[in-house]
Amino acid sequence: MNPSTSTSRKKKKKKKATIFSWSLRDIFKEDLYKNKVDYIDLYFKSSEQSFESFVYPLLEESRAQICSSMEILSSSPYAEVVSLEKKLSQSC
Image (cartoon, rainbow, N blue to C red; front, side, top):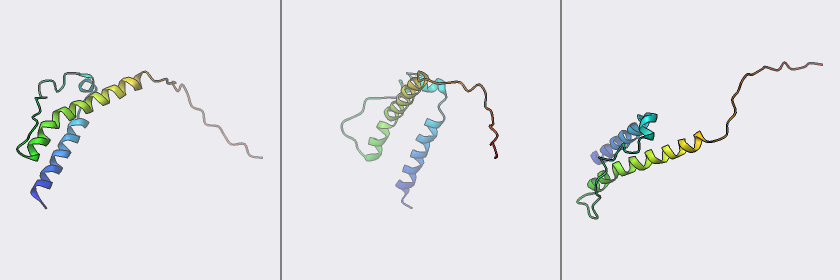
């Protein structure tokens, strides 16, 4: 297996693990990645450097989208199920 492919897969898994490890408090925290998002250069020495410069902005964008979806979901109409009854079938 190509070493760079293996490294790329590990980084993807790490990013997914980061997103799935967020608590609700993390999702609603607007400054979760405030200190980690830096200036992004126009030119990069390598594709690795390019990818790494976008990790935190992408994580922040993902967090903001999840937060927005949860806010919309919380204002959606709903109904509370109070009870369920099993209806017996009528046989003739």
